[in-house]
Every structure is written in structure tokens, then in C-alpha cells.
Length: 189
Image 1 (cartoon, rainbow, N blue to C red):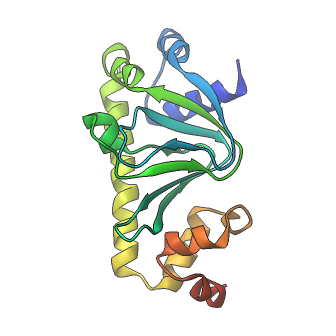
Image 2 (cartoon, rainbow, N blue to C red):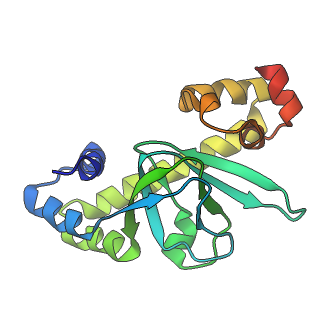
């Protein structure tokens, strides 16, 4: 079995039981894509058509505010997902953009596959619910950090959540993620 596919199978098994027939159904629908560094796979204000499971590499979810400034919302590292889940499910324009910060290998999950999981897997609806809950917790953690933590606490939380991220990402993206200036980031480090 392909290593890339095995990693998503293991991820699914962290959520639900999956027999061989169910895995066969899923694996036939999955698509492996390579995203070049700096390539944008989702543009803000377009409909998000995919969920990207990062096998290797790094994706950045961000938005451009009313002043034209980029604001980094989240980083997706190996064995995590990147998407604008609201746009994906509702078929509405995305509030976010997604860009590769490294050459990245992803497994792409389309809406068709997402819906098929609900109907074809014994525990498909449970899988969908648990993934939606994880997405909710990620957003909730971000909101709590921005409103309830000091910049130093956000910096320390980021380092726990994303080990070695400082070596992988340009400083201005990290400062943006922490909602501080690059100068303030230098002082924190």
C-alpha cells in the first residue's frame, strides 16, 4: 500500500473502525496531489472544493483584511487537514486562502467523497461529526488565544502545537499568526 494512502487510513482509524471493503471504497476516491512552494490552492472569495490532508509539507490558511494586509489564521502540518470547512459544506465563497509554504504532498478529498463517506461507511456520519468537532476546537482555540492570552502565551502555545515551526516558516507569517509585529516576535524569541 502507498505510504501516502496509509497515513490517511491511519488517521481515519483514529476516529472510527474501518474494514477492508470500506477502505477500498475510500482509497479509490482519494487523489494525491503535489503543491509547489508558494502555490495557492484556495483563493479568498472562491468556493472551497476540497479538503487537503497534508502528507508531507506545510500549508498556511490566511485571509486578506480590508486594508489589504495578510493575516495568517492557521498552519497545517503533516497528518492534519487544511480547508475552509464552511465554504466547503455550504458551497459559499471562502473567507480564507490556502497556500503551500513548502513543497507539499496532499491527499485531496472532494465534496463527492465527503458525502460518500457519510453514506457508504458504517460509521461515516460519526467520522464527519468528529472531524467537524476537531475543526470547531481549532477555531475555538484560536479565538480564545487571541482574546485570552498574552503574546508570550500565544508564542509558547504555538511552539507546543507546531514543534520546529520557527525553522520552517518565515518570521512575518509567524508574527501574523500570533497577531503581533515582527519586532515583537524578535523580542519574544
